[in-house]
Amino acid sequence: MKIVVIGGSGLIGTKLVNNLRQHGHEVVAASLSSGVNILTGEGLAEPLTGAQVVVDVANSPSFEDKAVLEFFETAGRNLLAAEAAAGVGHHIALSVVGTDRLLASGYFRAKMAQENLIKASKIPYTIVRATQFFEFVGAIAQSATDGQTVRLPSALMQPIVSDDVAAALADIAVDEPLNGTVELAGPEPIRMDELVRRFLSANRDARKVTTDAHAGYFGTAVNDQSLTPGDNPRIGPTRFEDWLSRSIPRG
Image (cartoon, rainbow, N blue to C red; front, side, top):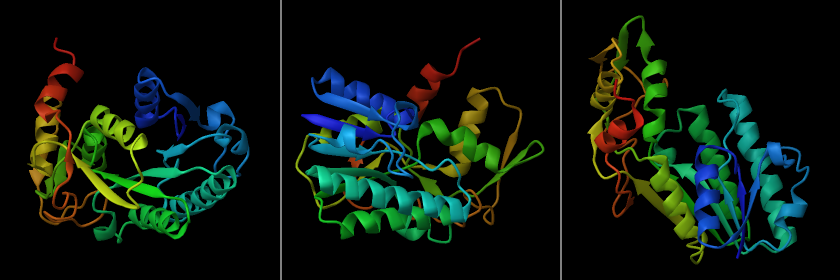
């Protein structure tokens, strides 16, 4: 099976490409570095020739409201048009759990626009919404840092490691299109302030987490439902503590 991974050189893309190749599939890792520009459409036609499946894990280089919306709308239209021309039979896109509940955020409005384009196209699809990645907990801490204080809400999360996301995407890529959405989450619910507290402690980071009900998630208000999956999500096996223990050097 020929599978094209858009954003194939990124965090998820690299892992997904390796996973699929290990299972014997013909995989094209498409990204700017390989000459594929989904914003202009340049270089898209060739890798899609003969492809049965496209997995889009590309992300916007800018999270500014206007720029991120333009990225996902333009890239989405270009990609879906090129797939239709090439006769692609399954479009898979990586999105985010809670997208429809966090539309006060420009990033999530852009992801919602991307999802709507996919649903409106005639290409069979599966939208895969994942919770926040373990690898981005440091970025959550940084976004909420003021001096030596990290102000975060106690909103519930259920984060997942990128390896488990890539493994799930690899399974979905060789399965039939759902023409619907599947959610991915880690094995354990954990509150955002506690998640970051554990991360900083493991890294011997001196910053202190202060629980603040008015603090946001990258500036957006959240509650216990905002970032957690609904009923029957697909659960990744890797626990946060296990990831911490193997990813942080022990001196």
